[in-house]
Image 1 (cartoon, each protein chain N blue to C red):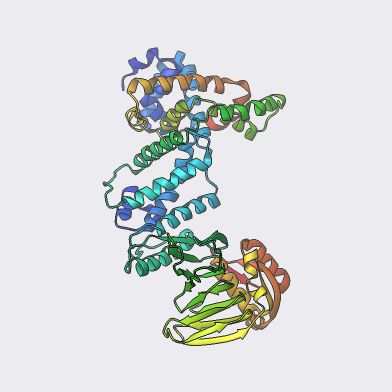
Image 2 (tube, chains in turn orange, green):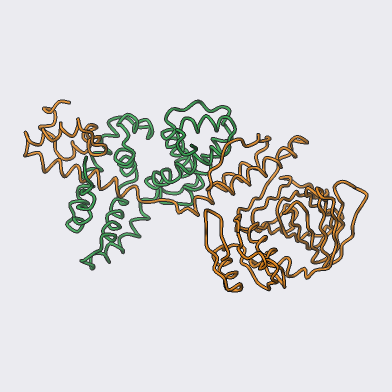
Amino acid sequence: MNPDKYQSFSYSDFAADEIFIEWVLNPEVEVENFWKTFIQQHPEKLAEIESARKIILTSRELISLPKFDSEEKDKLNENILSAIATEQRPLREMKRRTPAWMKWAAVILLLSSIGSILYFSQNQIAKTSYITSYGEIKSFKLPDGSMVKLHANSQLTFDKEWKEGADREVRLKGEAYFEVEKKLKTNAKFSVLTEDLKVEVLGTEFNVDTREEKTEVVLNEGSIRLKLEDDEKQSILMEPGDLVTFSQKHKELNQRKVDAGIRISWKEGIQHFDKAPLAEVINQIEEIYGIKIDIQDQELLKRNLTIGIPVENLEIALATLESILGKGIAPTTENQFRIK
Amino acid sequence: MFKQESDAEIWKEIKQDHQGALSELFYRYSDLLLSYCLTITQDRDLIKDCIQELFLDIWKRRDKLAEVEKVKYYLLSVIRRILLRRLKADERKLQIELPHLETSSRSEESKTIEKESLQNQQLYMTEKINLLPERQKEVIYLRYYLGMSHDEICEIMDIRKQAAWNLLSRAIKKLRDIIEDPRTSVILLGILAIPQS
């Protein structure tokens, strides 16, 4: 470093000088001494040097202000991941450890890897996937005009292009509500595939839920036929208000009548429960928001609640539960809560 | 553990098909990419699109990507290319006028408020800095915020040395006018009080 060079410098020369900038941004002993000595020998330069330092530090401080808020960032990351999920080639299994903040992302990745492998080993048709994260509902239109509402933490995959008159097929993980467009001319079928069964419909409104190692179908309008995955011949015809659950893993089939309106109320943003045990309510909240809720008083789990839980706002969901139970719910660790 | 991996290691993992590594890279650099892009355009939605395109592109071409030593510079130069291409394609104007319109009324207001809080002063100066022509803002960002060398700046902005010098010295003169404004003295004291070890 040559001090002579700096004798004729003005503030603007200093502010553009590599060594000067380096000193201002990352002062180290050696450079620090150089400049101290320089200022002692050339006190007339002090004002120019101070001015240059001000310029560098102030603009550095102010130009770095804009940042994403964390919600915006998560959303953007999710968009990138969903776009990747529609890519055509199979993805290899995720091997890496994931930090806690990526928990939901990991679930999506895992689901999409399974989905992709299932599909792309069979054919090379381009697929589209819609994915929701915890505490989020998405509505969209399928290529045939049918409407789907995808519940939180769910994925729906289907062919990118649908041929006119051909049967329509979508694959679901998680939970979704369908309003299927009836194809009067062609009578083209619409099917929802899950791990457990196939829902075959002509034109109707129904809810499919694949959480908890089973598939639950609730019919709201029209009629549908269920085909169990292990037995193509065994099929069940459903009427409005019917609820059918089938677990491939446990080979369990149940059929009962429910209030379809209450069961599918989540699609309007609030999941209603009518005299449902607390255990079921907690279960749902855990699934929707990807959290864990502990309870000290186990007896309480049997208590029946009539309650509406918002599905896109965890804070209000917990506050609602708190007020109905008359008990406090406090966070313990990350994504963990305790009812006291 | 995870957080301490170097950029180059993360890059290698992306090339080995780890999607998690891609997200890690995204979370590491999204704020930096945003603040950099804002020196070029004020269109936040466009910036988000471009960031998405950047990461998608990295993922799609992960087989063909070279080992990159300076991942940060790679990201900055690619996002810049994407952003300029999109700006051109959309025939959107590089948004110089827009902040003008917004700020002129606001700074009128701020003139009437003599005793401004620290935050107001910061806003006032940020507005002023936003009024710099976008390429001057960019050069200031790369130079003072990222601490890049002159050569690196020329490479990223794809300009000759002399052009980069001109941009920088023009920006410095304008910054001085903003900073010598008497109403900004308090915030300056705040910044300069940072101890220099």
